[in-house]
Image (cartoon, rainbow, N blue to C red; front, side, top):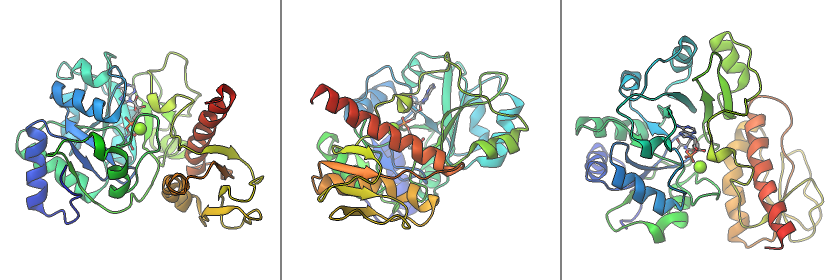
Length: 328
Ligand code: TXA
Ligand code: MG
């Protein structure tokens, strides 16, 4: 695999777009986390991307597009409230699940009738999408650029560490610095009368209600499958535990105001929820690099972005608990 490409000029992005068109894999930065991109109309490329990720083949993947004009190619019967959401939050950390058009392959949706669409808010992602469009590309299918079930990468170095051994010589990793948001996009099911949040993110419930004028209800059991909503997900190798009972040598993550337990290794001290989201995954990776057995986390309280941070922390800790129970 090529080295990480750090200076992403227009020329680099034109080459990366051509690489995608040939069926190559291009990992790219977004404002949420890094994505593992392939041509969303190329079934073989999507299959290879799934192999690199180690993800089961029947899982759906988000299609990233350059502009709202591209929505119609992939979807149909878009409800008015979804148009409001697009107007208010795209480009941005929001994925809409919409009724798919006949252009969408089963290999994108896991055979479901809905497709996930997002316009990311990152200059490199948007320029890559526009360059891809110029060579006839319709959209870039991209899951988070981590092995299935692991922590999403928020830097090019983290992508390399996760996937280098699985990528081919011509695949590329574009470096766009640290992801500014740090947790994955809000996923909103827009196939029902009202929007349903399937994965919380930086577009919060209050923002969605404000944009749509609709009061949100809790998810329905028949909602489409979202692999990121498996209770075991986003997990480091260390056992993740909630609270302040860290022993000497354990990792510890909490807001700055919360003191480090004696002998624990402080992995992050965010001052705000925004900083918490931005630093969480890098802190979990740092704990794994130091081969810590346990990482103790005090989740943030309250609404807004704190909901998404708690969601990811709880999933990381669920995984650890079930491993412990099974003695793995
Ligand atoms: O912020 C993000 O959303 C990042 C960046 C790269 O865009 N992407 C990301 O993708 O987190 P991924 O695949 O790791 O998580 C997306 C989730 C998965 O759980 C997937 O199952 C779900 O969205 N999803 C995607 N398309 C879907 C569809 N058509 N129906 C139901 N769920 C879908
Ligand atoms: Mg993911």
